[in-house]
Every structure is written in C-alpha cells, then in structure tokens.
Image (cartoon, rainbow, N blue to C red):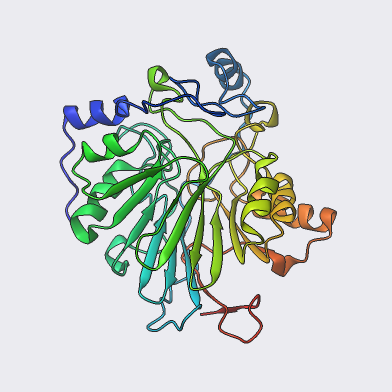
Length: 349
C-alpha cells in the first residue's frame, strides 16, 4: 500500500491529540486530567532538560537484520494461541477465528514528523502485507510509540478492525476516519465477538504535546478468550496495580510485560519498568508465562539495544524465576502456546 500523503492538517491533528476526556472525577481523574494514585504521572520539563544535558546513551547499531521468520499457523484449535513479535510493543495474538494486534507500530519513526524523532533500527518482523485479517486492535495510550496514527489508518483501510483504547482517545481516532472505536476506563470490560477485553490500571502518563498532557488515560488489557487469559501491560512503571490485577482476574496464562526504555532510572523508574521490575510484576501477577516487550527497535532511552534481555536473565536468576517462565522472542518469531495437554507448556511454531 502506498504511503498516505501526510498534510499539515494531519500533523496538527496528531499533535493536538483530540479534545481529551470529559467526565466526573474519580480515584484517577480530577475532572480535567488523569493521574496515578500514589505516583507522579510523568516528569517535569526541568527534569527532562536535566536528563538531556547529562545524557550518557549507549550507542545503538544503525541497522539490525532480523533473524527470525514468522510462521503464522494455518489452523488453531479451541484454546490454542499463536504469538508473533512484530516489533517494539507490537504483537500479533491469534486464536481460532480471532486476530489481535497490540499497540501496532509500522512507521519508520515514532514521532509526528517523518524526518525527526526516534527511527527504527530494524524492519517489522511481520510485514504489514503479511498480516492476516485483523479483528481487534488494542491501543494502550497516546504516546507516539504506542498510538501510531498512520499505522492505525492503514489498518482501518485494509482491515476495518474494532479499535479498543483508553478514555479520551475515541474522538481523536475518529478524526482520522477510524469507524469502530471503543474506549474504556480502568476495570471496564467489553465483549467484542468471542473475546472479553478489560482495561486494567497502569502507572504511566499521556501526551501528544505538552499542553494536552494527561488529558487521556493509559492502561493495560486483560484478554479472556477460549478459557485463556492473556495480559498485555502496555507501558507502565512497577506498582501495586499488578497485585490488584491478580486479585481481580486470577493468574494470567500469558503476560506481555515491558522490559525496555528504562535508563536513567532516576528519570524513568515511575513510568517504565526495568527488567528487575518486570520480573517482580511477573511474580505479583503469578503469570504462568511472561514475554518481554518494549525493546529492540527504537532508541528511546539510554540503555543499549541488547541490555533488556541480558538484564532480564540476571533478574530471573536473582528472583529464582526459571528461564522458561519469562522469555524473550526474536523480532519476527512466532510461538505456539497450549498445543500440548500441559496447558502452560509453549511450543515453537
């Protein structure tokens, strides 16, 4: 599909981020802006300047060739699932008759501009043209590396999926012609087709530009399909919300947990987990298996490209978590789950 012509009006709309949410105050909304109970929602501009002035970023390669090839299944039985790591935070989750994308990002940069901002260092592991029919798209919040408007427009044109996002984002997405958009508050549930989708709390923040900071909500998603529970954490710092999610839903069969974009810790710790935080979240959730996300494609922070999986291995050992319980997929890798009689045992495709 040819790249859509991006007009100045489109850039402004993308930056503006829509009107935000209007509604009554709650335990995470003050009537105007959302907040994290017990933690700050983002850092100050002064902190950002301090980080940039003293930044010590590790050097990333200019380009990385993907080593894995996706092997999408031709058939899935009841309760079986295929998971393909597309890139960064984007996964294709497949059940029988249901294909789901998480925070899909296919653009060259995670930015409102085509020539500025963090650029990808590898191709998507699954080309856009190779996607099967997409039925559901989950959008956890409005940051550019999670809400990639050009990719969402392409999905609308090619697949017309049901987009499920957080409070305040529906009107924004509808400005770009997305037809079926639902928005949820924390703990709200929607049942599109064979799936039940619940929005869960996360510890993060939102913004497309400084003036619309925290006008829209952030969160994760709990998917319940064919007797299985799959948790997609979105983008989050470590906090007590993981224990609350476990208390409400029980253990997840599979958890997709972010392990990247975490350095320097003084700046990132409230909004992005590091691998040790992710292992603690895995234990709080009592997930049967966890998969690392949010790394290896766009240089957003100061750690090296290979640091997240390496640090994850150290964190697993520190907390006594077996390697098979918290895994990392290669970009482009497809993995099949629950095809054996032992429900927690994954097998490669």
